Image (cartoon, rainbow, N blue to C red):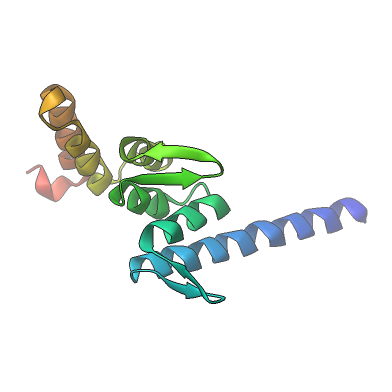
Length: 127
């Protein structure tokens, strides 16, 4: 029936986007590259990955590591990228640590809170 067929098509589109997102993520972790004779640096790869799948924690985290970027016509700061990743996976210890680093000495309390969260996410570090 049409409803089942529509759901199958939608599911396939979602899966295809997730696969393409992972491919862009992987290219970014490899330092970027050329696709169809167009160069993409690491940051551009992570931006493409997030555009295809805005639930990709790794792409948000790595986009944050690149200082933030532009996704779907919106500029995301480094801090916002880490915060977005943590909304998806609040147990991402590296992300908590990096978020803390964005506060620097201007907000030591927030920095400390983030470092403590990072330690709490991984039991072996908090013993």
